[in-house]
Image 1: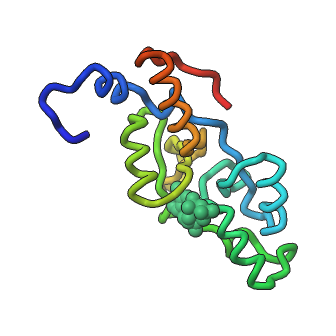
Image 2 (image 1 turned 135 degrees about the vertical axis):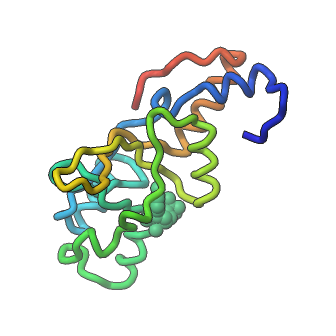
Length: 163
Ligand code: ADP
């Protein structure tokens, strides 16, 4: 954070809250899905961002509402359109980890102008390549909920049940 020498108690409290304390469950589609599958999953799971994973759970990409709207209004046959063509793909995905401060993750949401970050853990690959397993979803809603709970609790944040 901005490096003031004497952080006030609220700031200190905020800085101690980790992504792992507030994130939601990840909602995913597999990389063999079509754009149509992603639209259906977005409705049934009631989320605006889906993560695209391999059958082993490795993060491959992110697909947002507007990614899908774009291809829908472009007139493509969504049933035939592989999700890989629609998604933003690794290594261009902004991620966070359970150990990262919520404040740092919130800065990433703002700086990169996205609504959600996949919460990831490193995955062991046989060939030594770096890859990530998706363990959660950090959204602007999580930050908003935390903000409300912090003020309602007078700064006394308790770890809420995960959604
Ligand atoms: P929407 O496009 O529905 O407004 P976002 O603002 O979250 O939703 O997404 C904007 C663009 O950024 C989309 O193309 C999406 O694929 C991409 N995107 C979303 N989240 C991430 C992320 N965590 N890392 C990289 N790109 C992302």
